[in-house]
Every structure is written in C-alpha cells, then in structure tokens.
Image (cartoon, rainbow, N blue to C red; front, top):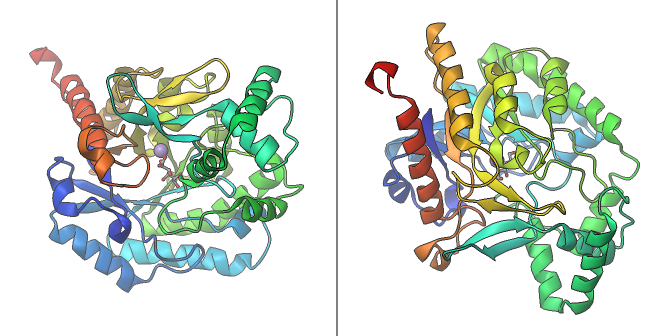
Length: 394
Ligand code: CS2
Ligand code: MN
C-alpha cells in the first residue's frame, strides 16, 4: 500500500514540506485551475510534477481528471471533449503519471449538510443530515422529491428545520452542499443550481448509463495503449440526489461499469466512506469481488443513522470494519506480487479527516485538514503494518 496524500496545489493551505512530515510518499493531485473539458498541456503537467518531485514525492494519482457535464448529459461537442480527454491522458502518461481517478456524479461531487458537526471528545466532522438535505431540496429549491427519497418523518423534520432556520442557516446549508466541488470550480447559487438542474430534466438512469458507456468506449482503448489505469470514484452519498440519477453506488453498478468495457484500464477507486454510507453495501465484500480492478483506495469510515443521515467517523471507528477491508487490499497486493507485477502496490490516502486541535485555525479545504488526516493516516499505517507481518513472526 502506498501512503498518499491529497494536495490541492496552489489552492492548498497545507504545503508540500508540511505533507512530508506526515510520512506519505505519494501525492494525489490535479490541475484544478484548468476548466473542465480543456486539455491538460504537457507543460502544465510537467511544472506541477516538478514541484512535487522537488519536494521529494511522486505524483502517483491524478484526482481528478474531471468529466465535462456535456459528456454526462450526452449532448454538445462530444467529439472534441473525448479527444481532449484522450490528449490529457496522453500528456499525463508522457510525464509519467499513469493512474487517473474521476467520478460520474451529475453536477455535484460529495455532498454534506454540515461541515463542522461536533464529535465526542472535541473536534468536528462532516455530516450528512437527511432532514437538512430534504429541507434544501423541498423548501429551498422547491423540488418535488420522490416519497422514497425522504420518508414522512424526514420530511417533517425538514419542515421544522426550515421554519426555524435563519437566512444565515440557509446560506450555511448551501455552502455545505457545494463544498464537495473541488478546487476553483464555481459553486452554484440556489438560482444557478435550478438552472443547472433544468439541463438534466428528463435524463434518467439508463440515459446516464448510455453516456457513461460511450465515455468508456471512447477513452478506455486509448488508456490501454498509454498504460493508464482509469479508476472511477463511487457516488457520495451512494443514492440519487436532487432528482439526479447516480449510477456508481453499489456492487451492481460497479459490476456494470467494469463489464461495459472489460479492460484492466477500466478500474475502480475503492472509496470506503462513499460506499459505506449505504447500509446495503458491504465494503469489504465489494473490495474482494472487484479486487483485481482496484487501482486506488480512499480509506475512511462513516457512522449511519436509521433515517439515512450519516457522519464521518474516525478512520478505524464507524460501520466499516477497516481492518478487514485493509486485509482484503493486502490480499490483492499479495496476489499481484505473486504474479510478478512490479506495480503490485495499491496507492491509498486517508480520504477526509476530522478537524482536530489547530486544524480549526488553518481554513483548509473542507474535509481536508492536516491533523485530522494525519491521525487517520497514522491509524491506517498501524493496521497495514500489523497485517503485513510475515505469518512466522506473529
Ligand atoms: C473525494 C471526492 O473528497 C472526496 O470525498 O473522495 O471528491 C473525489 O475526489 C471525486 O469524487 C473523484 O472524482
Ligand atoms: Mn473518496
């Protein structure tokens, strides 16, 4: 397992020399300043890479090479967008970066309703409250959500929250919901989001799957030729949101994607926190089932409530048995090593962390504080080290 750390480049308040003190060796990053759909030039990639190398790291994973909304909607100048994606992949490969994470969530990325929910013992975590999400959807956006999305008691709690909320509470909710969009990407206002949602009107699950299949058919053969490993990040939370279909949410979805173009270049980012937010997902079982296609892992934990709410737990706590999951990944590495593969090691990063101690003073990207992630990495490092001991030594 290669210890890695997400770095937002020029947008990150945490410097590479600080990251060096965490002990991680890999940097997971992107060219966040380049608008979606445009080519990542070799020159821009080389400059970013050289800063990373100079600081003593390897840029081991791109997160993310984003997919333009037109590709997801299946309309617009798709030929150019696919060609640009292939060119960006070729430029990354030419600079020695071969693992590319991306997601296929329409409009939003990870979605939370509270960015600073208190945790026992002090510090804060990211939280998804089903009633607050319902309040946003039903009352701030004025959408008619399906009964299945929000049961009666959640709607009732949403109505109470909305009635009692101040303008500042509602602004805070919008900010939280937008926080998952990475880098410099523009956040939506309520009106902007309504317009963006209108662009998805009538687009259902099978349409989104058709767009996804087309994307894979357009880019995976090129990735194969370039020795690039693409790895899709699951939906977070793994359920439809704002009436937008989500198609990377469970084992069936992942099976469909990996079969749509059956190639090692078409792989998975195993994100335990995202998948773990659906009670029906057994994350370790998913890891074992798709092990040979996992090119990257995001390790974190969630604690779920009965109403569909959840919060980010400490890395070894929460509903996912992290030790079992790490064991599954180590088994896969052992299998790859036995095959004689030089690239047997799976890069992973502590995906999010609590805000702890001095984190509150740093104003870092939500979910990406220094101390909280350092704690997560240290705990995971301990699990990996303990599970990696040769049997004879135990
Ligand atoms: C990340 C995702 O912060 C996070 O939860 O895991 O935002 C991830 O970077 C994207 O979905 C990948 O495209
Ligand atoms: Mn993740």
